[in-house]
Length: 322
Length: 286
Image (cartoon, rainbow over all chains, first blue to last red; front, side, top):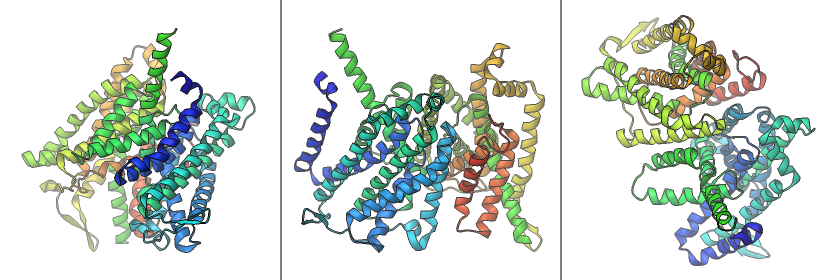
């Protein structure tokens, strides 16, 4: 354990290796669940770049997630039949959208930031819901064909869930590495500093707004990629993906896993899906459990499952050799 | 012309409901600094309890009288056992806690009363329509239009002239100072939270005959009332009144004049206000 905590990249490699091996062990159903978990992990981790690292509670993250989904599907419907083009369009489109919206949002703090992001997210939702000729309205955009993936000259069909899983794993790992690079850099320190005390950051000469804006754009771009994967996986981009209730999912997953740990939101996403499948097996009212769990976590374990577990491990180790 | 008048009345009746909800929300925020995500769920609970009383005893008035206090009792428990441990912590966690309570209550309602929509008939004296120029208009909506300002005046008298109202305003202005001069702030917080919940549930009970009662009604109103208190200025009572009227009119005129963008209008207004006057129209710039 101590060797692992000193060299977290070993734990990361073990995790990636396990995820690579998983489809050969799991059932088809398990592979599909794992694909969903990975997609939502990227979404939740993009949210946590803002919440956990920068101290900004965004209730509009689903706007970028959903926009990414629409950008990807629109690319496949009207543009080149290429998955990479669709993903790139989702990433760039969401990043530009986040740049425009973030330019306004980063001016505000705390609750005002949460409400303003919620407002902008719902504006995007309205666009998706009402601009029928482009977005298909409340029915969403379906009936697109998913092109084959060309990889080193080989053509892979994505109708095989395992192939789709590997695509998602590849993209999500890239996204997570980008996040790791951001939070581990001096700029990441600046983010955490603005979370702790934005006034002091301003005093030492940094531009708090542009620091926050950069985080907002990175988070928006990665949420867009997550949304593109989500839409391609479900074969539809629908307005619900942009609704604030969907933003709430990212919030829930992050709190479940722990906002103070890098992989916390991913662990939260996994717990979320496992819980959902366990609880919906005997009742349709699973939100009541989710609400109760969130209340208990906020009250007793604000560091989330992963954060509390790491605390516990750290404490027991220190207890043994003081 | 008739269309215009109908729009005005529709805007006023929806605005008055929004005003009741927003008053509770803005009082709780002004005094306690808590933005309550579950406020819309308390509104919904008021509507469901009213419906249940109508089923049991057949009287809307009994539901209007007894439902809201029950919701207030529930909210006393919420404040005492869930919110109180969080006062020293980051405001985000208070928001998240009430978000969890909202999920719990919304689904709890679905568990008890089912996912279907229910209709509550207005009481005999307020049912039916009255002629209005060449058209007709539901009496119950007119009742709301008249009741709203009355409740507003009652609240104003309460806040401006009664001892409790003064204590509340004092605590909203400076919590620490109020504590120093002998206000029992923990007790006050519980009372304020219960009062806000009572107002929300009262709005819900009044809304029951106005719209159909269903599990999604809390979700819509919480976002609209967030917008009301933010554009009016959080903690500001005149702000809540003006904000609720603006949103009511945006709703009624927007639906008839520009149906395609109506859904986005409140959010556009919200962004414009937040970016030009970040503390709201009636808020004091900090």
